Image 1 (cartoon, rainbow, N blue to C red):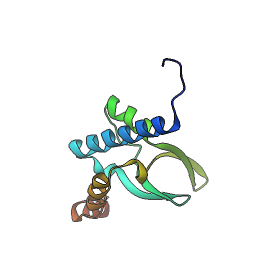
Image 2 (image 1 turned 90 degrees about the horizontal axis):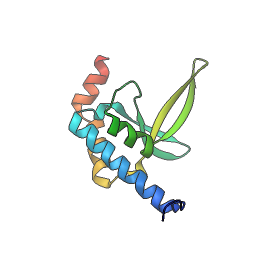
Image 3 (image 1 turned 30 degrees about the horizontal axis):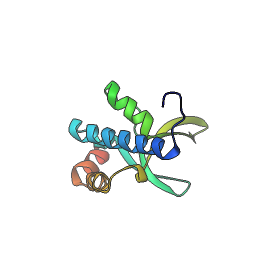
Image 4 (image 1 turned 120 degrees about the horizontal axis):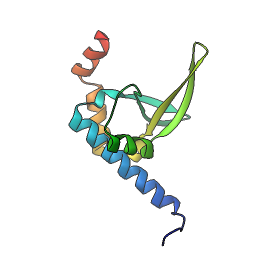
Length: 112
């Protein structure tokens, strides 16, 4: 019904679908390198490099599927997006973990 608040499980299902679409986009665009492992308050997930540019659809999926967090470094505050692992399908988690552990990714990090 229009105007009716969504149930929490419907909202989470929407976030999971957005996460699925976002990771699918990153894989197709060859941009899995924007992800890095992160754990916040005991919740495992992935931090997204905010300096990267995405399509408007991918950006909408990013905002829907992730949570905004702030951290401090050298007295400056920085915001970042966090994608909890629980919002991803098991095969997507495996894909990301395999990529982040690959020689290609580790070599590119070393060269930065």
